[in-house]
Each structure stands twice: as structure tokens, then as C-alpha cells.
Length: 332
Image (tube, rainbow, N blue to C red):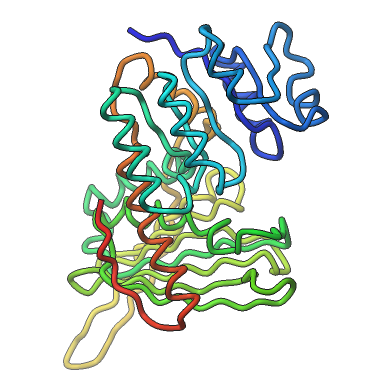
């Protein structure tokens, strides 16, 4: 059994949450950030943590067996390969990286060295989404017809990556997990309002083999926060609304739409909450990484899953840039 002793690389907006969770799990040994102020803020209050400005120093530490990378996406490929080459297990925040060739190289390195590689697709670990998966697998919605996802808020506005790359990985990962396959065609349109050429909004249409469809709308120029996944089947509908409190996050709508005598009929039914546990998703995700490092199990969001999500994002970006539909040939 390999012990998980984690160094968090990147201690900023999201990295500090990884620091908190890995520390509470008893797995954190070091924090790394080039910005001294960010490093001090993230490490303050945690006694005994080693502090590094360079990841090279962190992975040279023999007590570090794993790294959690929460740096800007353009650095993910380089840092992950360096950590794997040093024999460390790797957790990478989404997106896995920006280029498919880099993602495949990372996955190949991890497999060759038999090291854990996990991508931080957080919502795959959300108890409400896990409960939704089980609900659908149990046949409660029948055959899934389409999924509609919205991820919008006012900020955080980025200057480099667009809203598609910043927000949509969450939705792509959930949709691929529910459908169990890649789309064969994507169309993505975006709008630049603030800083060309960075798109502040995007609307993406995914077409899947067999005729299933999905739509994803993302924006950081939205008057209110909206994080909603709507799943429509031929026997009912379900909504995962992460902005809603408590039990209201996950709801079953057992509406039935059918045809009688050549005319459509709608049978509306009262909404019913779908039960789920209330554990913190990030805690579950971090625990899963620690468990996989220690046991050698394959992560729920491993390298192949990261490549699948990235292949969709790359196709969406090509469509966004060209204004044309794009097929997905780059299967993992």
C-alpha cells in the first residue's frame, strides 16, 4: 500500500480549498505557490506544513508521494508530466490540460509508471449527482431523450480562458457520465462582450449517436447564479439545481407526455425530492484521490475520463472559432 502524502501546487482561489480538505484528511504535507502572499495565506493556520515556491522543490521532497495541481490550465500538462516523471501520483484540476496530445501523454506516463492520475471533475462526486445517476440507472426516467445544462453567474471574469473552458467542463463531464458515450457532433456559438477574443458566453449543442441531444449554456455575465442540470426521459424528468438549498437540489418530476388518438397529452405530477447525502463534494473527491493512491484503484475521473471531456471541449472550441459544426474523431 502506497501512503498518500500530498503537496498542493497552486494555492490561489481554488487551491486553498484543496489545502483545507487534504489537511483535514490528514494527507497534506506541503503547499507550493510562486506567489509568496498566496503561499502564506493558504498555509497559515496549518502548523508543520512545508512551503515551496517551485514545484520542482516539492516533488524533490521524498516525503511527498502525490501532488494536487490547481494552477492555470495552460500549465497543467507540463506540471503533471514533471510530477509523474518524479514518481508522484497526480490530481489535476479541470480541465486536464488544453491539448489532447498533452492529455494522452500524461495518461500514458501514469499508466506506464502505475501511478494514480485523477482529474478534478468535482460534480461527478457531488452526492446529488451520484444519486441522480443511480436514479436514472434504476430506470426511473426511462430512456433519456435530452439534457439541458446551465452554468451562469456574474463573475469570475477571466482574461485568458473563455467561459466555455472555465465553466463547461463541469457540464460536459456530467453529460458524458450520464450518456456513457461521446457525442459525434458539436456546435458551439459564443459572444464576446468585454475583452476580445475571450468569449463571455457560449451555447453548445451536442448530438449523440442514436439521436440523443444535450445543450450547455455558460456565462459569467448573468444577473444571478444559475447551476442547473435538467434531464428529460420518456417516463419522467429530473433537475439537479445546485443553487437550491438542501433537499431542493435534486427533484423528480414524474410528468408523462404521450400520444392518444394522434394528439399529444401531458400528465403533470407533483415534484418529488430525490434523497441524497449532504457531504461536501470536494471532501469526497479529495478522499477518493487519497483512497486511489493508497489502494491503486482507478479513479472515477481518471485520465481516460479527462481525455474524453477534453476531446469534447477541443471540438467545441473549434466550432466556436469557425462557426461550423465539428465532428469528434479524437476518441480516447
